[in-house]
Structure formats: structure tokens, C-alpha cells
Amino acid sequence: NAGVTQTPKFQVLKTGQSMTLQCAQDMNHEYMSWYRQDPGMGLRLIHYSVGAGITDQGEVPNGYNVSRSTTEDFPLRLLSAAPSQTSVYFCASSYSRQGSEQYFGPGTRLTVT
Amino acid sequence: TQLLEQSPQFLSIQEGENLTVYCNSSSVFSSLQWYRQEPGEGPVLLVTVVTGGEVKKLKRLTFQFGDARKDSSLHITAAQPGDTGLYLCAGVGFWNSGYALNFGKGTSLLVTP
Image: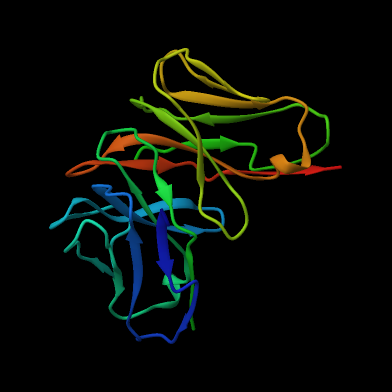
């Protein structure tokens, strides 16, 4: 099993550009989520999904869109990038059971100039 | 958002020393998880504590969940350079349609030979 994979590993965008961060898991997990990690802020939840076709907002959803058309994939879209979205983005997946282990991808380091 | 406060924020010690990291909240959590993150990688789960007063051991690491399930601690005995990393506590909380992890800001540990 590859676990949770994320692409790209690094990305530089200009303000106003759009892009999609890809996330895929091969563990048949129902639950997937996106976090951003900023220095001194810890990991903050952006969006999450409890299954295919179901998504919901987390703590910091503004400026990001998600969709979940399959169990395996959970892409994160930045519609119009802003410097405040410079961060490291992590995708995670877990069984739907509350409190189960979350498996994190290796992260995408995004810089918006 | 249920806030988790971790202390200390930074810790630099020599090999062989003992240390304790604290994770405190004013909220009650159904369970709490500890993760370790190494540079350039995603967090990896160390342990989940569920029951108030619970103590779990993982080799030289001892994890304790407070009786009221509001706080937790991580104690490392005879630290080694391989213990270097960012230690994150995360409380399992409920969001709109499911649950999510509320992360503390982390404790950055450096163990020097």
C-alpha cells in the first residue's frame, strides 16, 4: 500500500492564480481531511469528508474548495491564491470510527508570491 | 474550536536526559492522540488515550491522560537523538457532520549527542 499520497511536493504560485492539490489514499478509508500547517499555529483543519459525495468545512475553509467523487481521492482547490495561503498542506485519511488513527501524506509546500 | 495548549514550545536537551511535554485544555475530549512529526514529513501517530487516568507506555515514552480528560502528558526517559522531532497532541472533537482533530501548536524537541 502506498498509503496517502500528495502531489505536488512543492509549488510556487502568483497571487490570483488557481491550482489543485491532489490527495489519494489506497486504504479504503471513508474519512479524509485537509490541514494547513503554519509556523507557531499548529495544524488547522480546512475541509473534511466523511465519505464519497459528502464534504464539510473545518476551522479555516475560506479560499478553498473540495469535492469527493470517489473514496480514494480528495483534491483541494485554491480558486484565487493569496499570500496568506502560503503554507504546508497535509492531507489525512482514517477509518470513519471516531478517534481512529489519521494517516498523513507527506505534505505540499505552497508559496504564493 | 477547542484549544489545546502545549508546553514547552521548544526543548533542547542532551542525550540521556528525561523530559516531559504537557498538553492542556479547558475542554473535555473523548480521546486524545499524540503524534510525532519529522522535518519534511507528515505527522505519525504515537498513541491514543481514551480513558481518564489512562497511562500508556511505548518503549521509553510514557503517555498519561488526565482524570478529567482535559489534559495529557508525554514523558520521555533517557532521550536519544532519534527522539528529535515535533510532538503534537490532538484532541478528538466534533465538527458539523463528523469529527476532527484539534491540534496543539506542538513541542519542538532537539536531543543532542
